[in-house]
Structure formats: C-alpha cells, structure tokens
Image (cartoon, helix red, strand yellow):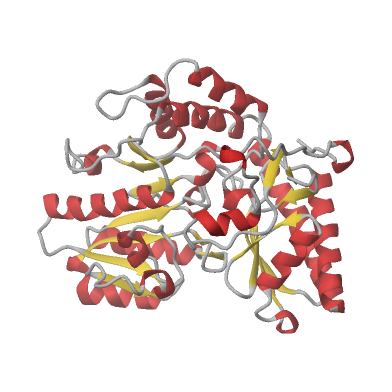
Length: 425
C-alpha cells in the first residue's frame, strides 16, 4: 500500500505527554539507554505501508523494514485488526498451557514446509539457540557424547546469545566475553572443498552444519546450489543435521516462503523469525517428528514463546503472504529494483554488483565509494530513504514485499539525490 508523501499531515507531539513532563529527544536516549546502539537522530512518530514519518513530520520511504521484519509494511490494517481482536481475549498464558493461536500457527507452518513439529520463541537468536541445543541433544541421544562439533561459516550471523554469536563467524561480535563455547569450526562460505575435507577428517564428530542460505549481516552473500547440496550430502553421509537459518530470508522475502525451496534441498532444522510476525516479536524452530523427540519435557523452554498475541498476528501474516499473487510478484519487483539499481550504479559509478534474492538485495560499492556504506546510509536518511548496510562496502535493501512499483522508483530517485550530494561534498 503506497502512501504518497503529499497526503500526510505533520505529526504533533505533546511535550507534556511524556512521563514526569520531560519531552523526548534523541539526546534522551543517550541519557537513559545503555550505549549498545547508535540510532539515527530522527525519532519515528507513525508509519503506514512503505512510509514512515518522524516527530517533525518529515517522510521517509522504508527500504529497511526494521531489518527485514516489516514484511507487509507498517500498520497493515488486517494485522492491526487481528492484534486488537486477540488483545480483547487474553495476552499471555505461559507454557503451562497451550493456546489456539499457537496451535493453528504450528499447523500452518507444518503445512507450508517440510516440518512436522514446531517450537516457538521470541527472536531469531532464541530460535537459533534452540536449534543448536537440539542438534547437540539429538546427537547425544542417537549417537554418542563425542559427536558435538558444530560447523558454521565465516561472516555468518545467527544471533546475539553467547552460543549463537560464537557459532556466527564474526569475531567482532563474540570477542571480549571470556571463554567461548567449544567444538565450533568455521569454514569459508561456498567452499565445497573445505567442507568435504573437514568431513573426511572428523565427520564422525560433527553433529550439525549451520548456515544462512543468504548471509545477511555478512554482505548479502547467497549460498550456491552446489554448496548447499554438498552440505546435504555430507550431513547424510556422516549422520549430521543440516540447520538452515532463514531468520532474515524467510516468509516470502525471496519470492518463496523459504529459500530452501529454491535450492533443491530440505534441511533437518529450520529457523524463522523477523518477517514471521510482520513486526510483532515471534520466532519458530521447525523440524521433523524424529528429531523433535530430543527436546522432551523440561529439556528446553521459553516463558513467552507461543504468546497468543504474537501467534495470532503471525497466522494473519502467513495468510496474507500466501494469498494468490503476492509471492509471484516479488520476483518481478526484484527485477525492477535490480534494473533501477544497476542504472543508478552506472550513472554514479556506485555499484559493482547487485546480488541476493527477491527483495533482499546487497549492492556492492565500487572502489570509488570503498568503505563508505555508512556515509551513504546517512545521506539516504537525509533524503528521506531508509536503507541498511552489510559491512563497510555493501548497501542492503529489504523493503516490504508488498511495496508498490511507484515507491520502488521513488526510493531510487531519493538514493540518487543522496549520492549526488555526497559526491559534491
């Protein structure tokens, strides 16, 4: 749903509406929040569809979607309605009992994927933590206590728990916290020879291989078909589990519900989050009946996992994403966006390559713009366009998958203005 900037009304902020009568500014963040983040100066006030407005009334086109979360844009009326409906019933019951929205969501996820069992959490990190624990526990239950090795890949990202950040292959996120969990080996991404060599050396000790089908934080690097098929073959040969982290790539962003459908393989465990709730926090780990047996009663858990409000919203997200026409149109929009990006790249000597799947794209900067991804992001914000980075040399784009063609073109126009102003300085 497109909301033209000319139709919006400036947002009025009541400075007395804040607790203790203190108005909120960007500086207030630094006073009361831990220095974990360095957010932009603007403070969002409201959003609709692919558009967002700050407290001054300035409009922004959202090509970031909350880091690939708002898969259907902001304030989708159907999601607002279902959230309100569930809020009138009950908000929370804990895992001491089940609830209908959670059961229906699990059923739907099983219908849409290879899965037979589902575990719910609240974030991608939680889903990946559960997946890693399950892989280790399954090996312990079905093989032996020495089959503990986890294989992952450099520049991967699987969450911010200590376990998941250690499995993710970026030391900048895991260093400085003391001894790391052991029995984790990192290999180069898309290197079939290195993978096969490791399995030949210590395959009997490997319990699982974990990867993103498209490395998001690591540069929007797609896994090759040969690479993922080699992983599947090695896991089958050595009785290891293939764990696919589709936290960022799932729920229609690629044009399929999940990228594994494009790769010709089926994982043993899949994790999903971000787009699953369309902005409401929820995550899920999916697997088969046989593997799921290792998470018996008391082995793992989550107080808020399977929250009825989150599950009600996610049910509606899946209904909307799988409605006729939406997924099939993602690839067409992707081709339009890539074409416009390459034209812009040629005009401004900006991008050497555009890669990814569907509406998760990484734009590699040319030598002229080397290491300036953050500066380009800031320039785009100044022109009213929200984008992401994936390292110092990649601009990452993840707009809502229902974004209009007009908004895609407007976003590119704003990016061009931003780059031109940056070049002039």
